[in-house]
Length: 530
Image (cartoon, rainbow, N blue to C red; front, side):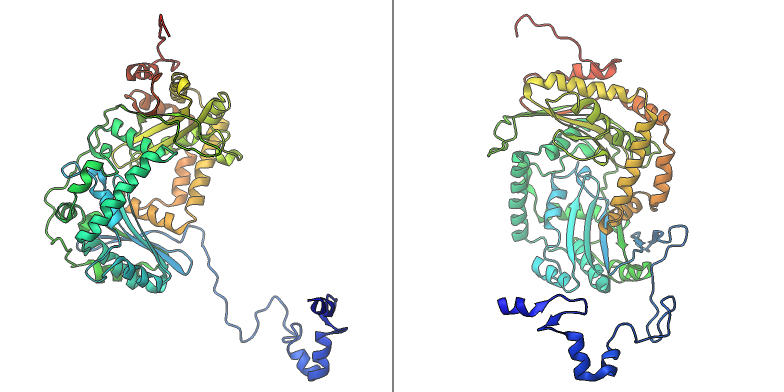
């Protein structure tokens, strides 16, 4: 080590080995001509830097001409399947099949089918004997796969090298239309679903459970109010026969979109014709007989779960015991013009946890930060959410605090709802619009997000609004629009979800009265004994 350090020292002329530079030794050994051949400065002595070098291939650069060149192309095949693509510069592509299928369509079935199908995705098929075979096939093209179900959409997606497009589309067609759904796989899925339900009830973050509860309260026993997670009592009831009866009605070509990002449209259409046209599914083809076309009926209401939350997160820094409340009101569907003002309103409310750090980009100037978290130190969380579907929507505020301050917390949230219909400052409106546009553009830099956006929009409307069109709509939102949509929303009944120690929770009627009042205050309660 010492010898190495001693023999190598830095010098202006290069690395010095025992006093003589490498360049100097090569010049002595090979002569001046040879040395010059390898020198960086004299290979093309008479060509200026502004001119291309002779014999070097001309570089091809990605260009955009004025308008966005990457328009979304849509083709409908003879069987009703839509093929949508968006070009994107790069070596990899994201391709997938989106289906109009989810928990909202399970009214006539055993609840929990969509949850089961999500867990069974990319298992054995007619061509592939196991999940491992599928993953090994994808690995040859550097691919990964995923399946996600929501209340109204099921999405099978693969990201892989563009050269493997034919293999990927063939694999997706097999996974969606030819799954084996063997008894062994269904039994494994039962265990996975059981574990997920236990995890849902034990995790410190209650947000997924509260979201499930608020939908159940807002749309009681219909469409998007049906359970997204399989109820525990239904786990043994779901078998291959039940799954096939559901798939026969909802996995039909007219309810599907094959979407791709980062590939040529003609190439994707060609693959779709090859693998998805005239392919009979394993549950036998034929017209869907019993498709649920129900429109969401907003009911409002309350769902409560009394639970001891004192030992949710034990350890050196345990989370204190908290009671969680979510209050929601009906907004609008993503197909309506008011969807954009509601999205701006949601961004303006913003919020987060009391321990969030960061600047304006993290919402430090949103109303729930300024008016709630900054003023009331005992509030642990206040966050706004906007859930939107093709026929309805729900704007909610989730808040968490000590069980002894539940009543005060509810009143603070109802006051914020009432203030939505009041004056809107020009500065806060512009900030919310800029934040929304910023979030939209940053999210759409990710290829999988573009894929989901293309697929969902084409599934709902047969076309896609491009980012610059959405930004123009956001810029056009005025303070009058915010007041108008808020006033319309406040005329409806509230939906309430409550989790934890609910001793001091106001009654549903009192919460409804507060949201109908001018100042959002709860009716006073007088007690002789406390």
